[in-house]
Image 1 (spheres, rainbow, N blue to C red):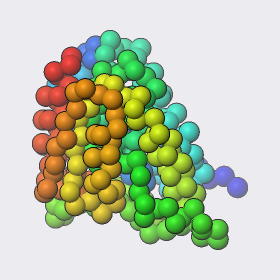
Image 2: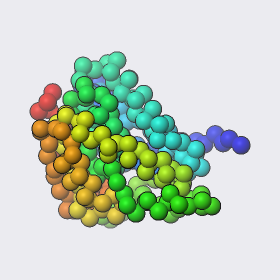
Image 3: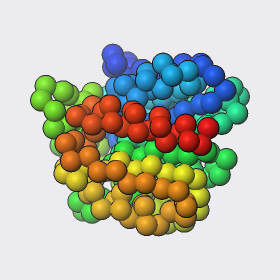
Length: 247
């Protein structure tokens, strides 16, 4: 039985056609474009062409996500990349959490990408590994909205599909093994206190990519969803400054 799930208000894709330089912006696992909209809007306001896709299975219902695969999430980002490629001479990528994993994947497979900005990117989450053994469980507790700033809530699922966790584990494994293929300039933002993705992920990425130009910035005042947290403006300003260096 298939369901047609409505897109949640605030989870819609963000698309803005601007100049000949494009920025692909990706949200994370079980989240939505809401977590990245402040960045996407800021980039668009600076004249960039911006595409923040809604990853397949996200922004609707967790039962919708349950049937999507990591290949579907890649396809969502590739579709956005194709749209930008038709309109832009240069493309940058920014991503949060699994959006960072997707940014890494794109850099591994599209060497023409000029530079990437990663926010608490994920390539290994040991706490998730036990899910591989689960057989008769469909859903786990929510992982969204890990935010330090009071009164801010991430638009994310209130349950996490076990099938989806198994998908992201396979995807992180795929991306982690090819990190050395990345040569583009890379900016990494990391929250030392992150209750979803261990901060050691960012250090691992920093040490294993082949990029000569790379920078690691700590965000001690934000948790995992730093794009909605105290460091939101710092991420926006830092990413814009970093991308402009390579424009």
